[in-house]
Length: 367
Image (tube, rainbow, N blue to C red; front, side):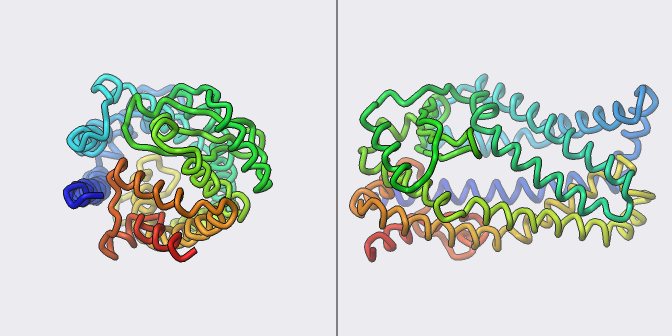
């Protein structure tokens, strides 16, 4: 990568990280103002005057705050996901397509929110002393269901699926999966180029929905050796049981945050003039807990993830022996995705769930 491209990648990364931090701070400020000003209580009261049931009040309240947040966050969201991507020539998505994707994502988020928060409030009413554990277990189970449905339900809402047309590459991937003792349904490609010029590949799904997904931006620009070593990395996650380990880590985090809410929320409810978590108006407080907990635990989760990614790289190199292809693939990805090859240590700690590109190349050099 030339010096100019390195500088471009650094600028791109700096802007993205800055906007991400700003977005998180902005969300916390909005939630605090909404709660402290009494607007949350007023909204629940206003909706309850016309709603026919408690559930309708809950569902409409969720809809209003979701739409409200989208509108208040629109300048930052638009800058981060549309303007910056176009400024650095990483996207060719039209404004209309971007808005349509935002609406689809919002609808999915709303439906998932209704289910997860609906179970939260129901369980809270049924088991006031042990709700935190019951809700945690349901959220963990539901997240696994979502992971299973993602490749068959959610991804097709944003991209066009089709079976991989390159039969030679498809057979090579199937042979690699067999060699690494990974069962897959099929190999698919998606039209990622309709939205971005970045390259990506994934091994998605659980159980019978497991499948390889190749972006056309990767399939058309990378050699078969490079694609094989990319997918060997993805298969290594399953071979090394990384998915189960990440589920365990995320499950512990979910249980911990709900236990913290259970033990400490009474104090903060009093500060904001609320009597119980059962009060729908207290939802912003719950969201504040999750945002702050996420910020605090992000470095630890990133650290765990980087270790797993490093181990997956090692196994991919060991299984395929494609050291040269791995290095050339990493250099191509860095240039195509404008990756920050050697970030500042603090940036790495808070934003990198994969080792930086230069570290991954150094690992391959020593293999």
